[in-house]
Length: 72
Image (tube, rainbow, N blue to C red; front, side, top):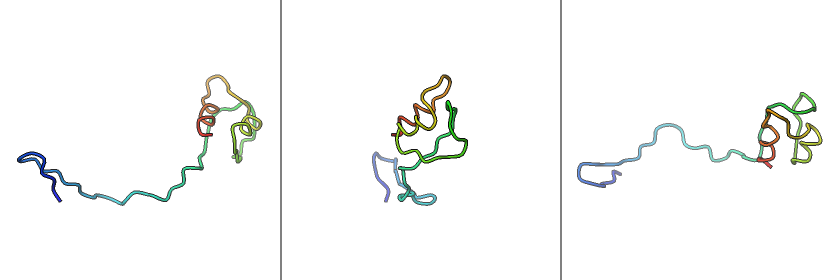
């Protein structure tokens, strides 16, 4: 239904495309970057402490540890 805001100006919302994705999980993510050490294959990390034990801490020229800290 058009919305009449001022004379001669009409605003109407039109759906164009698929609806939004409402059932996506935001509790799982993936990170890629430089680390001090660790395995090359992906591993499950459940906390910042487990990340630091497995991959090391903050290193120069890499924001990976900061990103992981922000996620947890």
